Length: 301
Image (cartoon, rainbow, N blue to C red; front, side, top):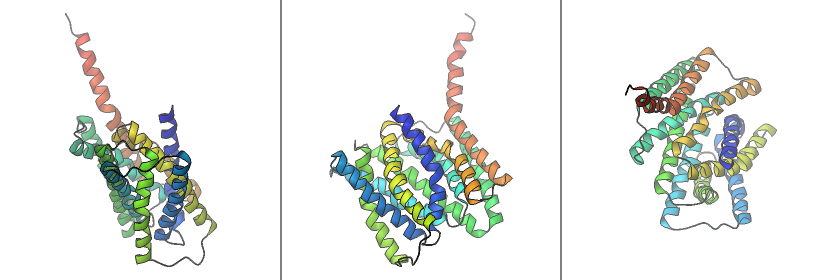
């Protein structure tokens, strides 16, 4: 039951996070938005760690795990915040739908998982087709939109690297400790990045930007990251990545309804192709395997 509740919670969080990311950077700038989020998240996660009575481990595998988590918290998040300036928020969730495919490919190379099956290869073709359609739609919005898509692809790849690396280290570190360690490594990097490339405290922050930063810091970072790494402890990296099967449609509809983002036929087609790739990635080989298992029962004696 805990696994299912964690899945549902992350689906809802990942559906709302792209829009909050976009709003948090409008006005104060994306660097202030992401740095403010991580500062709030670090304070909240340290409070949770203290209340839980857990202590951070400092052995070699623990330090490597924190570094792997920081690849997502700093690397992936920084890039997606930058990219969110150029594309509609719903597109972020759609492109992140390619996360299971990237994760499966990395898991095959890095973990030795049997993930390069016929179903997965067909899923890659569908996913690339959907991405190609999204690129076509981005060209209509301009050069910056193409940069935004490339940025989200890089962010997705970094998150896949992070999750597979955590599984490879297998440090047996509780999820709360993983996130705490990752944030403690990431926050100084964010502060240095903000000071180097921005360094100006915004003169005014709109209520919606402030609310988005607080929501992302207190809820998406504190609860979302802990639930994500909790699932990563108990499930395979590929299964955890399948959360992106549901959230893209919700994020697209939310962005269209609340932020008046365009929902064209090309966007819908690209989304359906990527979701179709995820469905094929998850179920094609299972169905093929079940049919092959039943085949001997139908053979004449």
